Image (cartoon, rainbow, N blue to C red; front, side, top):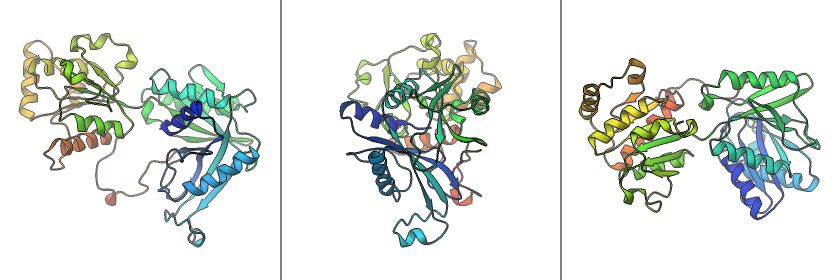
Length: 377
C-alpha cells in the first residue's frame, strides 16, 4: 500500500513537531471511494495528508482527529451512505456504502518507528506488513507492529501484540504472496478476542527507462506521478542532468553488460522501457533486462525495428524462450491514437499499469461488480 502521505507527515514532524493522528479505513460494506487499509495523516496545524474519499470526508475526519489531540484516545467514526441521513447533514458522499474509520493519535516512539520502517521500504531495504489493532471508540491505545520474515516488532513498548494465531495468519499472507509483493492486499485478521488490520508494505514499483531525451520526459513525470521510482539510463552526460529530469529517482550511465552485477534490490523493476536511438545499445539492453524477472519489457518504436533487434541478437547467439517473449511489449503502449510525446507516454504508462495490476483495460462501464479490488477477511 502507499504510505507516502503518512511518511511525509512524519518527516514534516521532524522539523515542526505537532500533534498527529492517522485515520484508517478499517471496514467497508458496499461501494466506497477508497479501499480497506487506506490512510490519511492529520497534523494539528497542517493540511490533511492523503485522501480517504473524493474530498467529502476529510474535513469531518479532521474534526474527529482534533478530539484525539484533546483526549489522546482512539476514535472510531462511521459514514453510512446507504440512507439519506448523510445528505441531510451535508456529507453527500453519494457512494452508497458504509465505511468505518479508526483515528489513532501517534506519539513517540511510534512516530520514530513508523518513519524508520516506511523509509526502509521506500529505499527498497525492507518488505513486510503493518499490523494495526482495531479497538473500540475511546480506547486508550491501539496496538501497532511491523511484521516481516524475522517476526513481529512493536512500534512502542506498551503496544498490544497480536496472538500467535493472528501472526500465523499474517505470515501465511506474506509467504503466499512472497513472490509478488505488489499483489498483496490488506485484510482483517480476526479472532474472538481481537481484530487486527494487515496492511502490506512493499517498495514502490520502479521502472527502468533506457534512453533519455525530450520524448522521455513525459514518461518520467507520468510514472513519478503514480508514486513509482524512475531510473533513466543514458550514456550522454548532458542527458543525466538532474535539473533536466527532476522527477527521476536515478540518472545513471550504466552499460548493459554491468546490469546483472547490481544488487538484487536494484534489479527489482516492475517494468523496463527501451527507448534508445542506438541500435547496438538497444539490443544489448533488451538482452540484459530479459535475463531478469522484469514482468513488463516495452520497446518503443515500430515492430519492424524490434524484429531487427531480435534477429541481430540471434545472430550473436542470444535467443529468447517463450517465457521471455511473453514479457515483451513491442510496440509498447495501448492503442489510444496518440502521436505526440505526451500522448505516447500516456499510452505506455496506462499499459504498464494495466499489466501490473492484471486488469483488462476495458471501459469501467462494462465491468461487473466493484471498481476496486477490496481487502479480504
